[in-house]
Image (tube, rainbow over all chains, first blue to last red; front, side, top):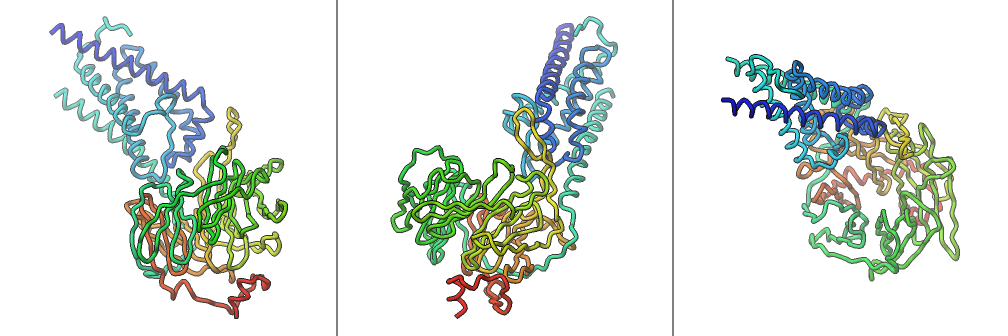
Length: 149
Length: 375
């Protein structure tokens, strides 16, 4: 019982740390080359019209979620929003791959080097992580104070 | 109980996220493929498919014809040429021999105009010319002019498009070689609308039948027809309604490059000239056209260059879900390249060979080809 509790805590902790790294890295790399990111977004067939808003919105959102992960009481919300965001990214990629005439890429930094299949697998792993963490967190009746972030 | 609630919550959030992106996509699709304010005339069954030719590479483009064959060149293997017999369907691999290969080639284009073939690279810049009997080419031009696109007019003349470094605009030019080189540039024919480079983008053709250069703008509903000495220009209008290029050009200050900030609207995506006809591939829908057709075919609009008029349109089918990447017409044949397939069609002469000689306002009467044609 105790062992499984430790396992649960570690899973949640590792997932949240991985998410923080992912979001902070993605947001920072986008801001570092903001002009390029904005142009790439604009070239996307889906979101041209809203490119300016989304260019600011996505990295900001990523930073906000990363911050939420730092607080125990916001942890669940952070995982739910990460789950939503990753689902959106994955849907976007799937639509691009299947329905768009051409494929632009605007994920920041090294993520841009990923192939499309790797990308989907990568996103899938993160979505799965969020789901597992949400499952564990929802089952913890009382937030465990011993977890420091 | 708890698990059910979690699954319920997650599926709602998941579905909402997915539908949010899907709705965004559908909204933008609607904008792109909206039916526009022009009407096409489609002709039923303008051609029949003769045969299909599997290609080893998807980098092939159509580089020329002679009476019985057509030639395919590859942008990734520039010295390789595929010769296809239209009757027997035989293919023959040809290796081109260039006098010199020690240039920093970056964008090589081959064009076959029997009995000559040309290998051109405007980034070096250099042009090789050779005979199609031996497939050996000697250096015809080196370092005279840089160009972004070129098309041979005859054995001694080459028309090209280049970017004027002072004006920062696309301009047209003709290079002639007798004992020396003569370059004539024209800086006024291509009309700037936005930035000068993107907005004047287009395809340059030479039409031997009319002895005219034809320039089809990519982003506006216009083409230009002019003599090879840049006199007697006439402007033609295509059926599309976009008069001004719909482009948003931005400067990337880090790399000092101009880029398009959103996907451009291609009005005349690809074009081809043969005899008195101009063929334009368009993916823009007109009035009363089914949206679904664009998922299985491309639209080709046909214009008459004598009359400066729109004639009719027809569909060119996709092959293995691949859109037409290049197409060309010669005699009664139409070839289209779709991914790893070449499709060869026979055109119905009744549609494509109406020799309406009664109105030929734009013809240069001194053109020997035409003079003999009229007899």
